[in-house]
Image (tube, rainbow, N blue to C red; front, side):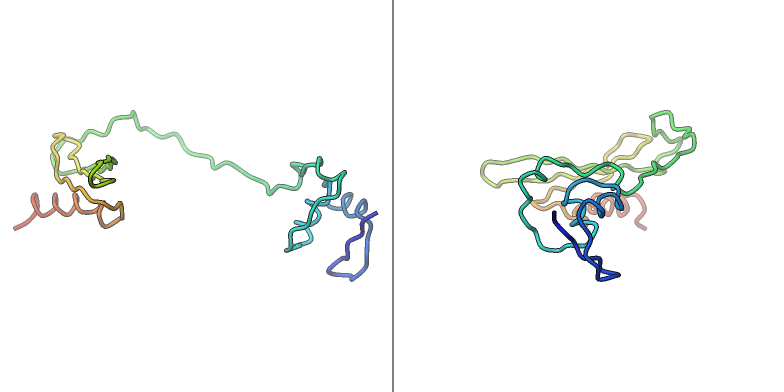
Length: 138
């Protein structure tokens, strides 16, 4: 039977004892639990064994309070809320092009539009910059 050395006591234990202690099956679980860094080939009988769900980290879904959002974002005045979006298109002569837009949620008017060959955060901010300079410049 295979044996593993305990990192804390420096004693060698049989694989079955380690599996009972860690509540898992098979040596892939043991290798990960013991912090084994190198990848080795599984023994013929251990290849079919899988890690049990008990060895996974606990997961708690976040609880959310009731959200009064009805699915629409409409404002009472112009220039209160703008929305942005990006779409991608392809040209056979020039390749990919990314089109960014900013839209006013009250009037539905485009406040800015920008096309670029890359989709960085700076390219995404360009329609907002255009809208701010057009609507709020002095």
